[in-house]
Length: 232
Figure 1 (cartoon, helix red, strand yellow):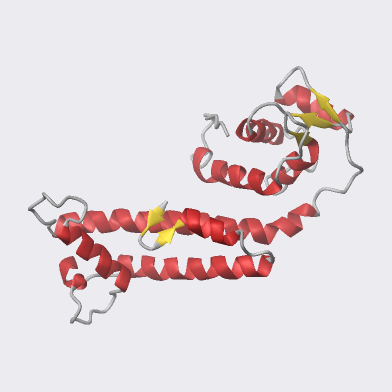
Figure 2: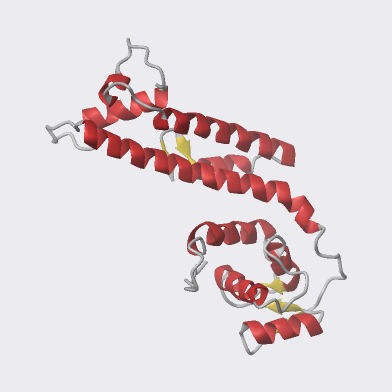
């Protein structure tokens, strides 16, 4: 996702270059602060026609470089050189509204990354450390049978399907309150502790957290009973 000068993929890639939690948070807070500044600029009351905010030699309250560049791009019709008409005020307002929505989407995802990093250390203490488990395969893939197995057996379960399906299954166990002390905060850690992939390799906690976060922000955000499968 790219909005203005913000490339979400590049931001997340750059985040991986930092080893310390404090450095990761400092980088993300800086990105969030910039996004908040731009959103305030786009949403502030405009006393002049929007095309006036693209002019260099006029100082206007509530203007910023990002808005200036955006309006210029719309007026010039950079995406369609054969288009002779330029957008009127109403069209510019619609386009600006869509742009600020995209900025807010990136800010939401960055805020979520901040929350994941801040809570990771605390969440890791929610589940007691136990000896390394052996691995077993299961025949009946449903939340009730696996919940029973988790409560009775100390082996890790070999999961042969996608991470998305595994998260949905464990979330169903959570909803039914079949496992004591399992909650939304420690669900990724619970999966990492109790499941391995088809090659009996441990799941990356970071990958589980990212997919789980996506579910919370998109697929489950409507809070309906409808379940949509996600294939990783």
